[in-house]
Amino acid sequence: MAKLPKISERFTGAIQATDQAQRIAELQAEVERLRATQSPELEQQIEELRKELLAEEGELEIAVDLIDPNPYQPRQTITSESIQTIARSMEKDGQIAPIIVIAQSDRYLLWDGQRRWSAAKLLGWTTLRAVKALMPEDLHRKALLTFIHHEDLNSLDKAEAIIKELTTSTGMGEEEIPTILSTVLRRLERSGEANQLTSLVTATTEAQVQGVKSLGVSENEEKILLALLDLALNPASVRANLMPMLSLPKDLKTAIRERGLKGAHALALTVISAKSLKTSERQATKERIEATNRVIEQDLTVPKTRELVAKIKAKYVKPEVSESKEVTAVVKGIEKLSSSVIGSTSPEQLAQLRQVLQQKLLEIDEMLNQ
Image 1 (cartoon, rainbow, N blue to C red):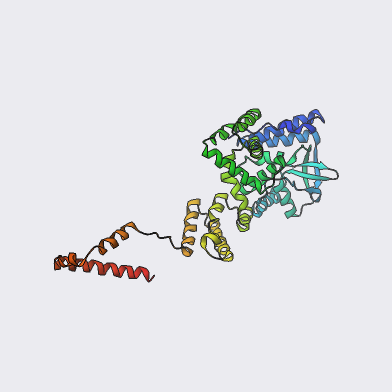
Image 2 (tube, rainbow, N blue to C red):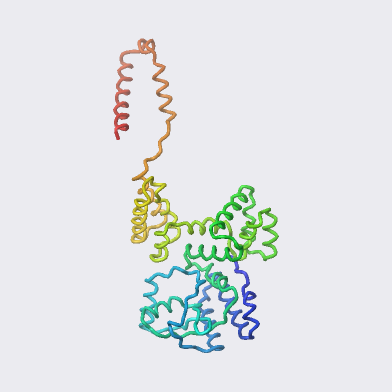
């Protein structure tokens, strides 16, 4: 997995405050690096971060209704089941680890512990134990870098977080970014230069800039490619696996957020559309929702999901048929059977020909009457 860009430098405003802020920022950067590499030490490092904050700032009892969710949280999908699971654990064993918040005037911004906070509200708790961290600059980028390479973040959340970051860093609209990205990658693929982007994912910032400029891309294309590379993301992978998530139908997005439908399954289910089934939007949506329910309830694999989609499509669309070269040749051959040729043929052979033709005519009538 590509190493994340060093982000402790991006906490400059907070670092200048005190030496303790610098130590906290460095530890935060280390935690994010571990998340990016899926290190087994991750939870240990998060616990160390909490201990560091506890030692520097102390632990607080904060009113639940004074805590605001992080508006830049990339993880938008938190199922009710997961919250209920956390709630049962907290009700039985109490709050084991404090949440991490950022002070904002007389309120607090939630930075780590969203499920525990949601579970506390579900349980009717009035307070939660918390530790305070300093407000980092560019909060959305910090949250994005924390989660973007984490396997638990689903494809829809990741795509929306990335597109939000790209609009901020490039100044372009959410709708035009996928189009520009797709256009430049198709052009680079045709010229055989797309692989150069893959090698730039782990390169230094200077090398990324020089590498992208050498590809002869436009200004807007350069902005998007560099923004993705700066996030340690392969532009081709983002286009193929993440950008399609943005255009999913509402029912599939809801299934991802509330029922845990996987991105690959959702993309397979998008084939069930009014256009592909040649039916009304209402009927197509009904078929798609029923198929989605079956995929989730039966825990179907992606190949099995595609098989299900193919069966549904077969109910509405008959396979396209084309003219057969073999049939054309037979027709022309029969047309060549002149009276003179038939007259010079033995009765036995003519009887055989008639039997074959009669059998084939029956089969043709059956096909035409279906």
